[in-house]
Amino acid sequence: MTLLAAVGEAHAQDPREAGLQAAHQALNRLGSAAPVFGIVIAQHRYDAQQLVSGISSLLVNVPLLGLSTFAGLTGKGTRFHTVIVALLAGEGLHAETHWFPAYSQSSAEMATRIMELLGYEQRPLEQVLVFADGLNGNPEEFCAGLPAELPVAGALASGNLQSSNSFQIASAQTGRGALGAAFLRGNLKIGVGYGHGWQPVGGHFRVTRARGFWLRTLDGHPASESYAQMFGKPAREWAFPPLNYMTRIYPLGFEQENSPKMVVRAPMRVEADGSFRLNVALRDGSDAYLMIGSPADCQRAALEAAQQALLNLGNSKPAFVLVLVDVAWHMLMQSHMDTLLKTLQGVIGAEVPLAGGYTLGQIVPASGQETHPQFLNQHILVIAFGEKH
Image 1 (cartoon, rainbow, N blue to C red):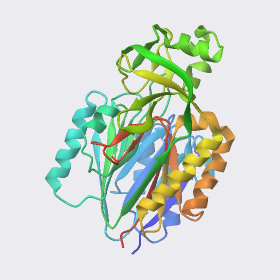
Image 2: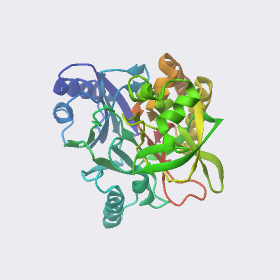
Image 3: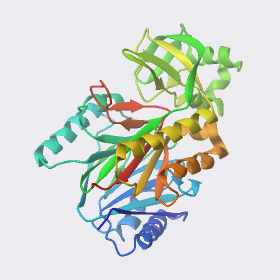
Image 4: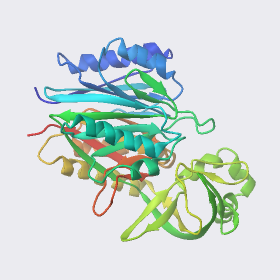
């Protein structure tokens, strides 16, 4: 049997009912095929445990991997207040999920545990898919603990930025501050593509004080004051809506050794003291460049990401596409996001099931001379699922 996929969605207020309806719809679209693996993308206000209870009542013993988001994505466009369930089926496809509840306390150790599990099993691996907490934990440390040759991709869950609340799912396990991982084996081939639509615009800063995930000062002044000078809005206003979250679309770019590309680091919010809260640590003394995005550049990046994913899929045809987009894209694109999804479908095929959501960061495989997988901000990540020939 060839690799098959189907996507279901539901808008019910009751989380158990929403999960059940989305799973039922996906099962109906899958036909007589038995699902082997499920991906769950749900609005962050749902109760995760009740949600999984509803899904699992139909998908008994089917491994699940999921994350929260403020809005989901399907081939029909951006979906608010929605649960999305994507199912994969196919003879020779195998999936297992693992739950790492201590990710927020020790992200690097979770990478070590994943490698230990893979070492114990000694079975050929096609892909590791990971969903982690985007508001707690250190994704750079996690990625640094993984080897370059590991085929891994994933994203960080988004949710309520004010309360730092998001959730992750690995089969029956749910919670915050965690990481869920799926080990995919057998008759499967993965193609990954990614890109972003932000460019440096000439504004230059020196990081003069950074502590953990908080960027305190730029050029010796509170970070909000530096942005106030650039954009003409008083520094005090950056600590309140809407500006305290709009910093996401004005990230900082940092030069990399032996690479012409900048690494992008985006604030999640502005704190009351004018500091920026990120989900990665910055280094004192590093040079930062203000970056600005444009819808046209994002459209181009999405097109290239889809083409790259298909190229990496080789001769396989996509059976399912997972699209994980930084929340900044929605802030920048607004109603243009549905047009962007049509652009993706024009490349991968309108008939190919598509699911995804907005995230607070993306994890991609190592490329070129990189020594470990990379953590990204501000990107679109396209993961195409096909079968081996």
